[in-house]
Length: 504
Image (tube, rainbow, N blue to C red; front, side, top):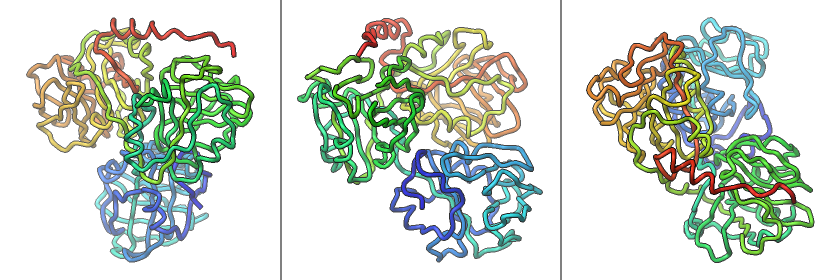
């Protein structure tokens, strides 16, 4: 059965008679629970899209304590629009095949073959299929081989989402916060110590772990660290180039005889520790099961013999708390160089022409880091953003429901995300969504993308009506650290972090 919620769990596929209490114990929270007669909408699904993982299932009644049928999956895959009537798409996290066809249906099967008309009428392997009508004046339709449930008020459609915060890689995290949360230290050694698999095993007795590095044993905070589900963090990966995403938002690897560590992306270069230098600030690596210590804490590398830097692991039974995200109040920025983002270890997660129809799944793909930068370029060849803004991911990407008011973020811009309408920012709280922001006051400070519609657009500053424009670009970057709004200052700071020799 499904042991814990993470991208590295076994691909269980479709599950049956699954205890609802197990979801609760694993930290999942209910985000949708309606009878089959209820008309499921895209807004209902979007309300469940803010976490890394979801469980979608059907119960025979509100009193049932088990799901007759269900499946786990990564939110970004489960809620992605598919627009195919005959093919569902594989999610490697949970092992099921998913489809979401707005105006038709949403569901899963144990194979890629479906027959949407408008729900899945396929009967081969009927026990492995679930389908909800979507964005129609109709409920239903199926829970396994039980079909024709459009008007059924007893069967229940239910979605849970994971509640483990997707903190990502953490910086300057206070050790006292771990202790207050009930975490217990299980490993602490200088970087010169040769870490072994036995050292990791001593930390495997609780649900969660925090792995980090301090500049010295007496330091009160971790220079770098990350939370994760213990069973996933310590799982052997045996991959030299790929780390695996955990629900905590970091990507982990453990290669016995080589190394153990994490990064902010899946790309690593183990030889035997991670030598990758892109996003160096977001990488941590310890040699494992070798006669050598080290190796890296962020951009500080070659620590094999260092007796000052300290390797630390804490274990705990409670959900972690992400460190507060600090971001300068930059406001709306203009002519911002794209290479300044790259130099600061931000990575691109969305880049499409304005004619592209932006979806909530596109935005979900940009979750998992502390910060985001959203901007517009006049063309794919442009090296600057005509306008853009930084913000804290959890604020920028949260759902709003006002057509007239945006919410201030620490980054200095005002943001909105109205599923089925639009997503964007302004330099003030005043909006006029219909369905994008038509407000022309301070037009140069406004950006708006239509969201979850079959239309692109709409504006980049005072340039409006870009719904069909294939030259202007909509771009989002994600990252974890920003010390200044000025690209010149950012570049100079980055240049100070020169990388040491790769020799071990």
